[in-house]
Image (tube, rainbow, N blue to C red; front, side):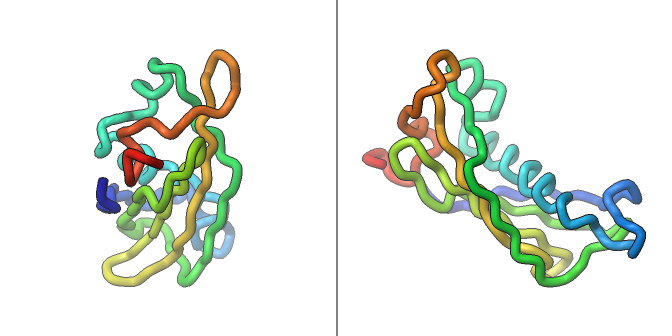
Amino acid sequence: MTRDKSHVTYRVPYADTDKMGVVYYANYLVYFERARNQCLIDRGLPYREMEERGFFLPVSEAHVRYRQPAGYDDVLDLYAWVDWTKGARIRMACEIRRDADLLAEGHTVHGVLDSNTWKPVRVPIELRLNPED
């Protein structure tokens, strides 16, 4: 599999901003989630199907590096891709851009759990970078 970037366009509503008129810092993790959802769809395994097949993807780590602020009514490009997979873990990389400007970047790391036993299981093949991972 490749590290193709999935893409979502998002216009910032007023509710996403703080008193300073910029996007509240925690909302970037929501933006990562929007892009991650699209990435799973693009790879053929949307969350709904993943859960129907008995997988959960809890977040075990999240990191955001803020570079420039976004504000109300900005049109953002949200990107996500599979950065690596190892056994029962997957790391999703993300970028938030406005035009060519990189506003934030980071990643989330997820465990893959069996939804019945809550025990770790291998990353589904659709999400692996290499079938051997």
